[in-house]
Length: 259
Image (cartoon, rainbow, N blue to C red; front, side):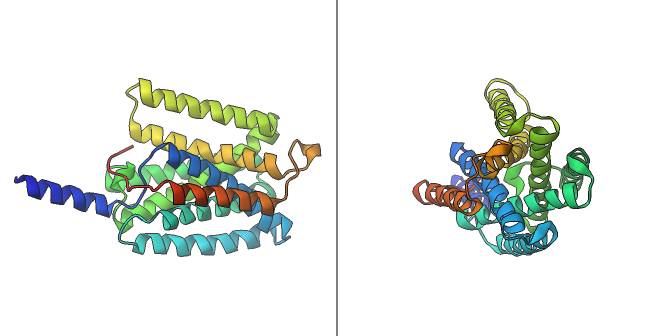
């Protein structure tokens, strides 16, 4: 095959990639987004006194609209992608709180249910399309699996973070230490083992959510509960500003290979 044809095919593949390249910047923005999901979700459901069910309905509508926009886009658009990620974290926060508290199944029950749903989503995705690698996210069907899986992972992360901080009694700082340590182990496995990069990517992606959950709770919970008692709205605005600055100052490229 002529070199020119190979280059054209490579450029076409890159232009069809709809997710960002996974770099240190990706993980910084992801952790900020998951923390924002916790403070933003709590701001609407608790500070605005709308309740978990109404807040979940609001965020689910936003999530659906952003996924449609993301799937309709012809190429990777950083602002659209990260807005959709934030939509998954906020709806994940309120859905997990609704299941854990309003439905009364508790943190343990909520974590178990959502972990099962997440594994089921990954299993069906792999069974239908043959891979859950992020570089395959270029068709509408793949994107639907991708975003449903992410939504389950974000919801699981909220429940798991609450379970670690409250049920396990580790508190917000203890929970943050646990999940930071687990992420460090995943990073070490990435650099020093031959474990599947796809498996490690999803492990890290899932673990950033409970880290963001306990970090968000640490920021806005009362001092009597071990938090800093910051305003949920001001904390959300600061996190949104951090994400915006990262996206503006450090341009991202579309993913080129599996993670």
